[in-house]
Length: 281
Image 1 (cartoon, helix red, strand yellow):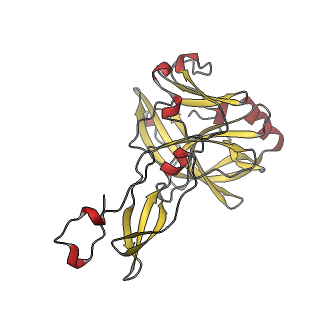
Image 2 (tube, rainbow, N blue to C red):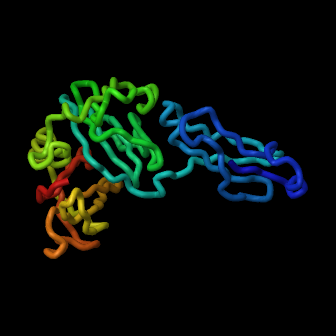
Image 3 (cartoon, rainbow, N blue to C red):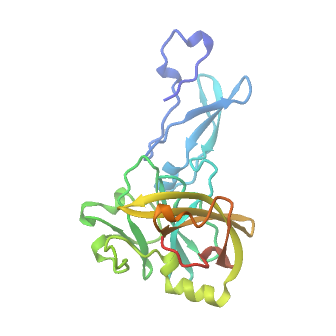
């Protein structure tokens, strides 16, 4: 918590000048940014509690200890482009389910086919310090299935955003059919395995260059791999995703930061894309 004090108040009680908290989930307290002038203080307020509650962000100014406070949303994304984990089209191709993150957080949004991605998930959003049981999500007709271990232990109302227009079901990961043959607990992500997406891009897909923004060697369950992130710009928007190449460290990286790769994208919804080489996720 933060307090706003006048110099003459510093020897008195501090709680009367404490910036308040809202009755919303997660971190919903105001906190100090900086002084705009001698009479106005700019304070931050997290957007995520409003998103979770299904409410619009409230930027109404507040007054503490006679000091005017201008309220602005805190940019939890830190200015990063969302990293697309995976996406899938609904059966009628009118909706897109997108799973994305910035760092250690997770966001899941359902958007109309041609819409832009919201900053935070309109179905599910959390931060990197919150527990997240969700492993995978996909359409099930007009509903959304979210897969996790021991799904019976979790109640959707404790995790899913309020006032969403879709029914969400928590399903045990053992009931997920799309799996790698080599590891029954790893999913074939729709970014590379979704038949609807493949057919769509084969019909109307266009090619452009993406730039490698991160190249690093990792070890995943004793498997050696190189992890690559890439970005591309289309229609005034920036998009970011990743792929992995499983190979030994001694064999060297295929790409370095700044290298160019070719992707195929949907001009009507540039978020829908695939890279030319079908690498593993």
